[in-house]
Image (cartoon, rainbow, N blue to C red; front, side, top):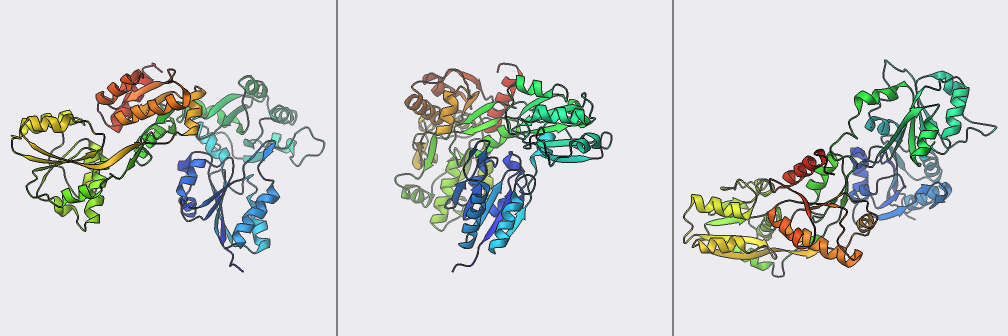
Length: 509
C-alpha cells in the first residue's frame, strides 16, 4: 500500500495571477496533481511541472463538473495514492470556498494536508476598485456574507435584521441573482435606502466591471447593464471613497485586449509590461525558436575566433544560443576575450551583461542600419573580420553593407524561426471582435500572424489596431495587408509599450 502523499489546499487569490502567495507558488512548482476551480486563474497552471496532471472541477451555477462530495473523494484518492496534490481554489480556501469540507474529508481518510491561505476576492476586488473595506472614519465592522442564500425563503441562516442594524461594511459573495431581495431585506431591517453599494465582477483583472448605486436602486442599475455573476457586492459608506482612490481602472491600457505575438520564451517582458498598465494580454505565439539544422556550425565558429575582430549580437536569442554553444563545448565568456563585441538594443546588451560580458559598441537606436552606421563612422572596416551568429531568416542588409565596406563576414545560423501552431482561444477572440490591439516585434511575427489568421479565419481582421516595433516590421505588416496604427519611436519592447500608451491616451483608440 502506498504511503499517503500530501494535499495542499491553496488559495489562488481573486484572479490577478500576481496575487498568488509565494508559498502557493512553491506548492504548484512541486505538484504532481493540480485540482483546480473555475475561479482559479488558469494561467497559474504554468507554474506546475509540465508532466503534472491537471483536473478541472469548476462549478458554475447550474453547471457543475463534479459535486462537492465527488471533489472530496477525488483529492482523497490522489492523496492516498501518495501524490503531491495542489487543490487550487479561487480566493481563500476557507472563505466561502468549502475548503473546510475538503480538509475534514482528508483528515477522516488519514491524508496529510496543509492550508495555504489566499487573498479573498471580497477584499481584493474592492481594493482594485478603489474601495478600502475598512476605514476608521467610516466603519469599525466588516461582515462577510454568502449571497447564495435566497433572502426570501421562510427560514434563513442569515440574521438580516442584525446585518441591517450592525452598520459597517457588508461584503456579499455570489449575490447578483439575489440582489433585489438582499437590498429589500436590508432596507426593511433598518439600513438607509441611500446606503452606497458597489458591484464588482472579474475583480483584480483587466476585464473588471463595476456598477455603483444605492440600496434603493442597485438592483435596477445592475440589471440595466447586464451584470452577471460571479460578482462581489460591497455595501457601506466606504464605497464613496472610490471617487478619491480609483487606481486600477484608470491605468492607460485598462480594459484593452492586446495580443502578443512573440514566442512564448520571449513574450514575458512585453506581456508583463502591458499587464502592469492594465491591459488584458492574450498570448498568440506566431513563432517558435528552435535549434539550427546544423548545431555544430555555431560551436565550430566559436571555437575558431582567432582573427575575428568583431562578434555581433543582434538579439537576445543570439546571446542565449552562443552561450549554450560555449557551455556545450566546455567554454565560457573568456573564449570571447580576443574579440570586440557589438550589440543591437538594450535587451540584447543586458542579456550579454548577465553573462559577464560588456559590449564595446551599442548603436543609439536598436536597428542593424544604425549599427552599421555607428561602426563605419568610428572604424575603418576594410579587412576587418566579423562573426555574425544569426537567425535563419535574418535579412541580408547588415552583412551586405559590411561587405561593401570591405569587411569579411562569417555568417552562422544560431537558431531557426518556425511558425507556431494556432492558439484557439485567441482565434476565437479575433472572430468575436474582442481584440483591440495586435503587437508585432519582428517581421516574422507579422508574417506568421497573417498566414495563421488567413488560414484559420479566411482573412486579415480589419477591426483591430496593429502596432509595430520598428520600420522593417511595419513594412512587412503593411505588405501583408495590415495597416500599422502605431510604430515605436525606439525599436525596443519599452518603446513599443510607450507607443501604445501614447496612442491610447491621445484618444485614437
